[in-house]
Image 1: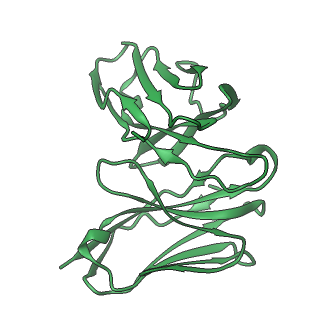
Image 2: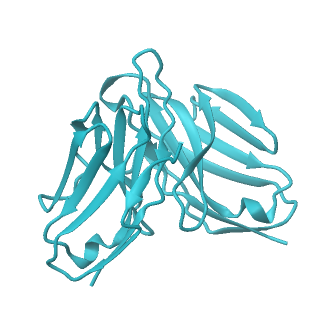
Image 3: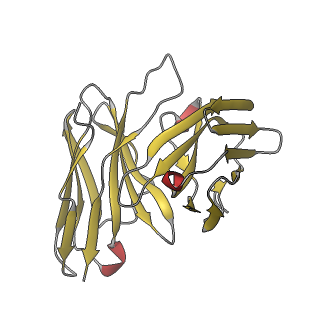
Length: 117
Length: 114
């Protein structure tokens, strides 16, 4: 298995531009998570989906951030307009969450390093 | 106050030392406790997980959970330079709105020098 795939790996953009991050979860997983990691705040959960439906988006910082999961094999995280404070590493993770068990391992992608100038 | 508190360090130890990493938490609903390891410029990877209270050992690594104190630990024996990484604790509730969701500590940066 190729694991969780994220693209691009690096993104440098100017303030005000739209940024779209992409994620392909592990085949067969039914949950997908978007995280943001900074030195100051650590790893923060932004939003997560279960069976392509957003379950909890309370971590999305503001309306400039939006996420979609049109099917089980693809998700996007969009920032519009981008700001310098959005500079961070964005991780996508996927998991198989079953009603019969509570423990679930999340598998992380390699991350997208975003720099907003 | 964050639900999970973890000292970010950094922690620097000589090769062969015993390393102790810790997290405290405030949410009594947490039942599953995990340690993830993150190498530089990589995504976190699961190292160990424990259910409820108790100890779990895997090679040089031992995870401990004390639910009465809301305190978890990871011990690394005979530390090696290859153990240099950021270690993140993570927790999950077994029921309710947190189902499927992990709450992470900030991570502790560990360097093991030869």
